[in-house]
Image (cartoon, rainbow, N blue to C red; front, top):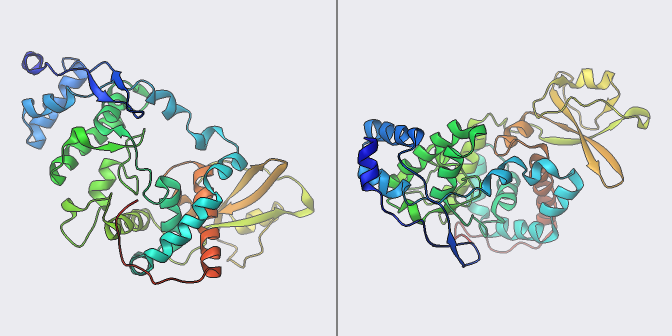
Length: 345
């Protein structure tokens, strides 16, 4: 099998343009590497691909070593909350969210009613992820997933699974895998779903295999709502609320995203919440760093659900802040005639 792959090779390691349009000289992947050959053999045996098909695609991939440091130091991880918020919860993104909601109000309300996820969170996720479909990724997906699957040991097993899912997805969509682009982490389309989630949650009026998450707004919104619903979204439940500490003191935070204390226990620690919720409600206390101090917030079950999209506190808080602000601004704005769906971007 390994010898056969070696004989099939012969694809150039250059010729594609970089994101700035300049030609790039990049190394390809040796399909005789044992781990790559084993991956190909498994796909041949269980997924009805031929060795030649896989060699043609995988042998055309170019290594992207710059993706590894990007994966280990994302903005969500290295920026203080105030800096991250200033980057993503901007005036233009708020205005864009109001406009998007007004344009797609009908389908947003339909999806929200069906799945129990309020429209503002669907809008905000799209705003943070792709600026409402304007920025869906410039990296060739095959380059990204081959690099992370075989040159990123920290998470290689996960990305090999996503590489397999991507090849299956491209076949189901009838698209050329070499022409599909995504984020530096391998997320695809307007909702920025990984290939496995794309295959699981993509939905449209037609067969799911044909759902285009770059242009089909009903499918895009349904996919996000379905993702959150199946991750445990609590219909009508709280998400993120401001808190304060009695006497202006500081409180110990345990970190993480999982609700780990009841409101009754938090109250005994001096944490105060204006909203009326049962004392048995579980929450996680968050300390958000500001330029000149800090503020406290309580994240609930739905906060944890949103974090399944991106498991960083800054990201999840940004979604919540954008959702709240867009909802407020939309209530203040004059309404225009809504549209049910329209082209991405």
